[in-house]
Image 1 (tube, rainbow, N blue to C red):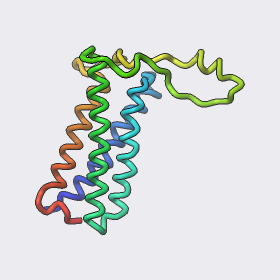
Image 2 (spheres, rainbow, N blue to C red):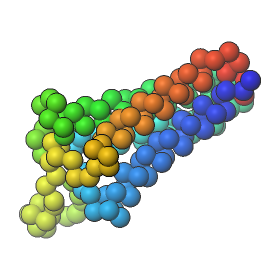
Image 3 (tube, rainbow, N blue to C red):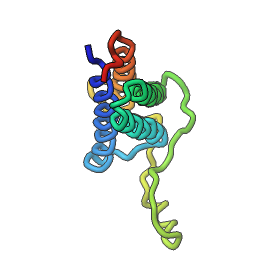
Image 4 (cartoon, one colour):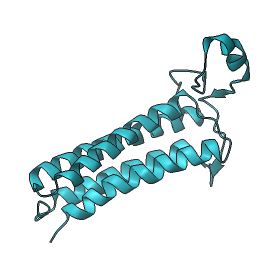
Length: 162
């Protein structure tokens, strides 16, 4: 059986879809990310690079599997942050920050205008939910589940076949 190609594909597709959804919710849906939302994005960005590296070395199954496993770990880290963030939103535990602002760019001449115009986004308030689960909660569940699936595929006998 050839499980490595499927694991490799999941390691690339999952963070692309979840990161794409995060950016769509921000730029299309108008949901400005808080600091912890940004923390969840960075491991997905790393996972995309690692999964792309796994595809680049697919002729060397051991290397490809290693990069795929690292991508799965990065996806899992994003999921862990997502679960932590969801817990803060649901009031299960205290967050590390109460609120933050969305990052922005520009010249120093209009920095005060940018500061005043930047929306303040609280980390302890879910701006959107579906079936009682926030975006952070969905990221946590989907990322952790996907990371486990990828690592499970890699651990199966015959997974090292290109």
